[in-house]
Amino acid sequence: MSKTSKKPVDKVVKPEANTEAGKIWEEIKDKQIDIFALPNQVVSQYCKPIAIEPTKLYVIPSAPSVLPALETAVGKKYTVTLSEKFLIVARA
Image (cartoon, rainbow, N blue to C red):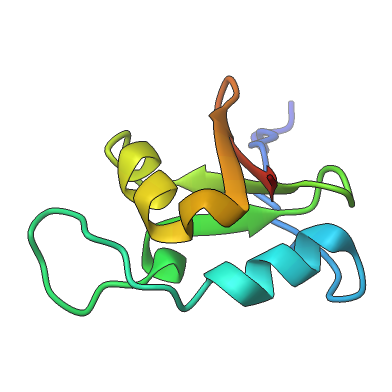
């Protein structure tokens, strides 16, 4: 009997820079985000990008409170919607 067990591997693949998703990530990753009343926080500290669809940016939030903070951080230039386990960022 083999004692090895198959564990799911958490492979996060960032979107490519030449796709719309990659361009959105480059534009928003360094934006200031007001979360947990902490100073000098940026989007990339609370969102992990993942390549799912090249036309929209999918991110995995580190906490549920990231949604309203991200909406405020990206402003009216983008829309942020909640999927089952992702936040989807697209151009407005």
